Length: 257
Image (cartoon, rainbow, N blue to C red; front, side, top):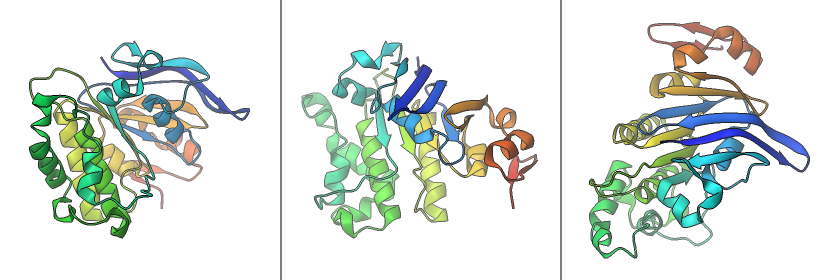
């Protein structure tokens, strides 16, 4: 069981953005998608989310081709946090987080909404912002609100055996150090609870510390994938990023300046 792409190509306006790209995200693991700008990271995430249809190849959610799943069915499998999610209407924070709730037609589940909402907002450290208007928040606070919305979307009762996946595109942008580490802690805890996580990161050291698996992309192709120790090689990273990169071990640390 997993979310995976199989030999995916994406061509838009005659430009090939992804080339035979295959990756897999298993339940309870954190997969970090890394690579330079233009490597295809966000495009791949949008393909896995179902927002972009591959030109060739397939995407599967727990062995089901997502081409055969409606939007609501996909939403029950995965939630997505994009790089930028502006709000035209100035809802308050609690309302925006509540938009992630998928169980409005389930009377039994719906009874849990109040508690699930409160726990999720506390988890993301935004419970004190519940009545604030979204567009009055800082960029970092807005990120935490959208993470809470994405987490609430994945809520299921403890008795449920359904697999769930969290797809995050550069969620750490605009966060200070404290909230950066706190958010990564929340994401890691989600994985420990059985959620499969795909996260686009630019900071290779954070990827090395928090991810179970690394997928290194360049020019729309997978260069290498595996554990941080397997993927982070100084020669490969230097070639991909075009700057001299050195590694030290115990702990694994990437240096480039």
